Image 1 (cartoon, rainbow, N blue to C red):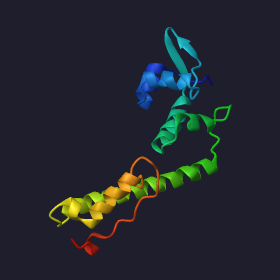
Image 2: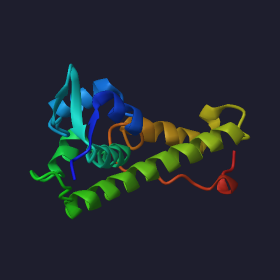
Image 3: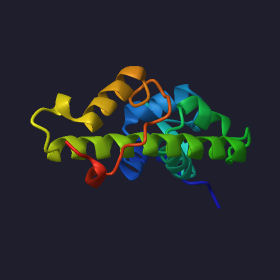
Image 4: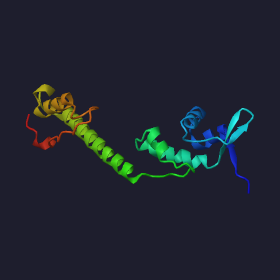
Length: 152
């Protein structure tokens, strides 16, 4: 049975990945066209599964270079379990930071203090943000007290 080939427009339509992104992925070595029909690139139908794997990797926060390393030369995925565990730990840290920020925002929104700067919890949040404990610098997120324990 002959291998089914899809042109770039069909791949874009079926995968939801724009043609410009498909060309970029090909340039990066993540996918490979099998030829051309006129000016349009052709892809083996298996490219759809590879694009789905790329989408999973991107959703998990892997870079395109990290994703490229998961594909063996023969095309199938070669999953590095240590890399997956490390990414899971990174996501746990991100979740803790975001949870702390969410709790801080909720506290600030409901805080009975006359001014946020008079609220000890809000001041701890500001100090934590200034030190990089929350935000983009990647340090450990502070433990925020329960709102019920707060005394304004």
